[in-house]
Image 1 (cartoon, rainbow, N blue to C red):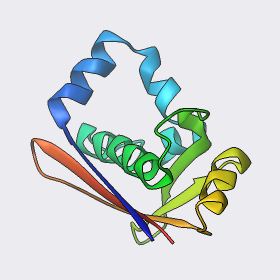
Image 2: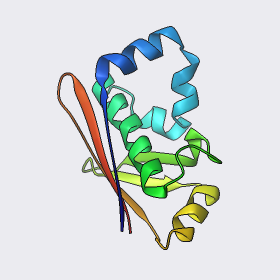
Image 3: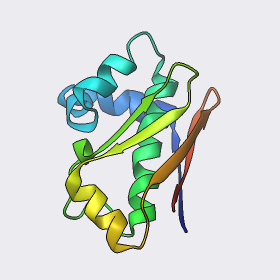
Image 4: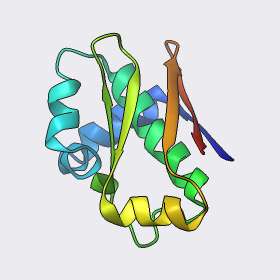
Length: 118
C-alpha cells in the first residue's frame, strides 16, 4: 500500500483560476466539470488536492501523465471515485497495486485529500 496526501489553500486555487481561466479545463475532464457544477471553489480545490495525492501514491508526480489521466467523480452518496486512464493504471499496476481510493475534505480556507494505492 502506498499513501499520498495533499493540502492546499482554497484562495490559492481561486486566484489561479481567475488569473488563468484555461487552467480549469486543463485540470479537470469534462465529466469532472459536469460533476462540479453548482459546487463551491472548496470542492474544486479538494478535487485538485485529490489528484495531487493520487500522483504521490504513484511515486511519479505528473511525469509521463496529464491531469486528465486521473479523474475523480462522486457517486450519488458523495463518495469520491477514482477513474484512471490506461497510462495511469499501468503505473498503479507497476507499483503492485490494482486500484486507488481517495478521501476529500475541506473547511473554509483549506482543502485536503488522502489517497491510497492498494
